[in-house]
Length: 151
Image 1 (tube, rainbow, N blue to C red):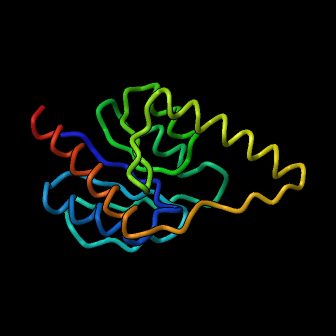
Image 2: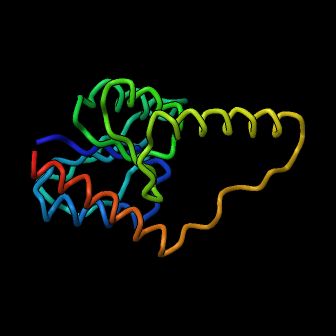
């Protein structure tokens, strides 16, 4: 059975809870990777990997350890793009499953926003995380888990 990898540095608590419940329910091995302690539900299938602080340290661990068929949960667009090249499914904290088309759009938007910020334009941030986002994430995770059981 594949593994779930969570880029946990910026994963909201409600999403961690959904992931832990799914790991317990399905007995799927799940790793939360972060540069700080991440509180998770105690379970033999749930593991935390605390890495040293630094730019992309957690991302690099995920890239090195994730295998074809695994699921990675991240908001990090460059990380998602790199993983998708290896047939690894990637969804974000709001339940969007990245595709080749959406990842290109996200990379372009990310680069555009970075250019705006570097020129002094204040662009604000993403919308606040909502119950609807949590439900969309749970639905995406359940769809992926269902496909794994059928495979």
